[in-house]
Image 1 (tube, rainbow, N blue to C red):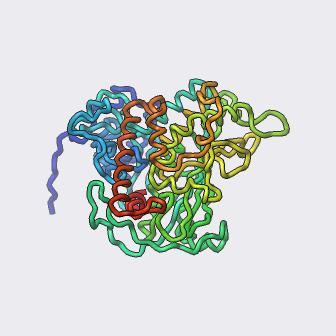
Image 2 (cartoon, rainbow, N blue to C red):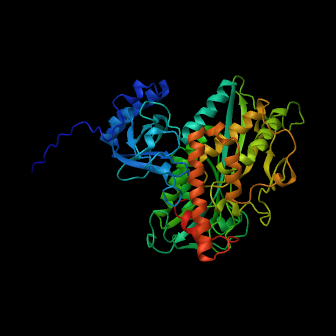
Image 3 (tube, helix red, strand yellow):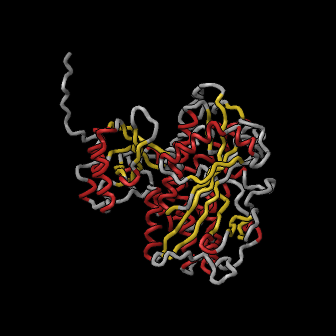
Length: 499
């Protein structure tokens, strides 16, 4: 039996540009060394998923054959800018047919950008057949500069600023999420379309909940979460614990401290891998903060953070002397977080649904913009002493874009460390409470200084995306006569499956 030998010509439509990485000096020596090892191992891999994080915090990817990836690795690959233009419900929020108004010429007509794999993020996905690898890419314009809408580029810039000051930020993940059992395999496509999400997956709770950390409650989810934990460890993620929270099947996953960029990469991979793992076993994992399911408690994302002196490795947040406690630098960092918290709150809680949690009726909700040594009702909790001293920001929702959420924290904290928080005066009483809605947070975002962190194009793009999401939600509530006081069917359709 004979097989035809198909002779391919260089796939110029797929590859970003020949020698794109080398021509624009995009990689470090460490990345070049990692790329060489990847190329040597590609014969043992079938597919590579090349992924990036969109503004909403979702992983977008293309699955490439290993042979295609050989050229893409050093040349990049053309990607459509659709994920920058669609809101959370896939409605077009940025007009790309005319002038998008973001100051990015390549967006006109939905022109492609180039996604360049970061070799340091390349890893084989365990237990996959065909053998599949995952790698995160960085977005670039065609002339070789970082794409102005790249979330990962924002965080890279912040870490570079810390390096210039002789600082190393350290962050840790504490993430709550829901595990449920799928009741059927219906895809939820009825009535779906651009800006019209179909029915959310039908699920059943794993247990009755409301026995915090009860061993029996964890045992009811362990047949999924224990092998999931081994899977996450095989991915190299520094998982510390799986715990059962208060809600029915509500799980908390904690991770060891990492560098800021590694933390964001880990969050993206953790959420993506967890949803995939559970779905293949007849279950559904959701990082939506407050699902529209009976007796479900809200989920949060607590971001732990500290700063090291790069030269000595000393934790700047640890107070001197045997009494321990927190240093003046830690308090200055916290002042920076508080000074910028309202105008950057949108980056930690970016959805309509995320604000369901930030209400005083939830006893442990971080409802006040303040800091305390142990009070869980405030946004910032000072934790530990000595080398373990750090600040825990309790306000985030689990589905937030990890690059933007972490970058917002580092940006605000650095202004405090360098003595420029621009918020030393006491805030008015009304401003002591965290925003209570996406509309309130969006108004503060657009009136504030977000462009100092994000750049004008990304700040404008996020504004358009969130305006579109909010407008569709408010229209749905008005059209259906639904009270916005409770979690709506719109939210369940919009977020439960995607996140």
